[in-house]
Image (cartoon, rainbow, N blue to C red):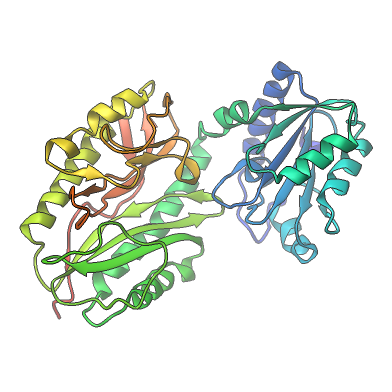
Length: 392
């Protein structure tokens, strides 16, 4: 197994230990044998999904194919030719190729070269592979059989090792820096663009990659906004405003997330204090319920405090990788009640977001957590508070 892992101890990018990659390869190959597949064809086009990253150490933020055979060398196929030098430094896989603007031909040629043109190929990412790509691959390999093994693969990935949890902690640390900086630097007169600049400035000197920075502001007395927007605007922060946030700073493919509100120039109004206290109690209840073996029903029951206090939920209340896997709301929200069983060392984000029924006011309060036998443990150090900013 060591022969197929290109491991560079002194590389410019962080890497897990060789032992960690051997663990992953062993688990994945055992699954492949159980499913009767001779290779995996893994597709990803976003850094928020770690399917390619898991076996390659490469953050696939553009369309990427990974061919991972049961026997022989894996191959990483990239969207852009000029990405090869950086990818070779980051990845633990030796064979990195460009598809020459013809991904179907490149994938097919490599499968034929690996003598897999008549094999059983497990596909990961079938729901996201472009239809024309998959159709073309199947037409050019009529004697191959393709089976969807994404759920089997994900069940392996989502049980995190201690090394992986440490990378989530690093992401949480970088994300904490952003809310610490916002607490110190939010002032009346700033725009949402200024607030986003504060986020970038907080973590760039320490590394990491910004995944999301949803930041919005509205009046606490006459609110018109109940969920942070995905793009900043020219809205200006005023005395008596609230700033609501949802921020993720990733650490090389591992993403923790935090949600905190900030009052500007004055204490939170009674309504916003109730929203905050409801969100905090919901977070604590869900954290206790989120233990090894817990189910969707357990989470929905624990979140009932939101409706009991007269609020509803607009955003998801709990999610896994990529803001999905699963994505659950509260018992009364519009979100599907996706059946899911949680296991120890899964990493989730708990993010209660109580909003008023008239959709005028709302806030989020949340953090990334790791599931344990006795409940979830917070990966962040920034406290649960509702600070008042801009007093000086």
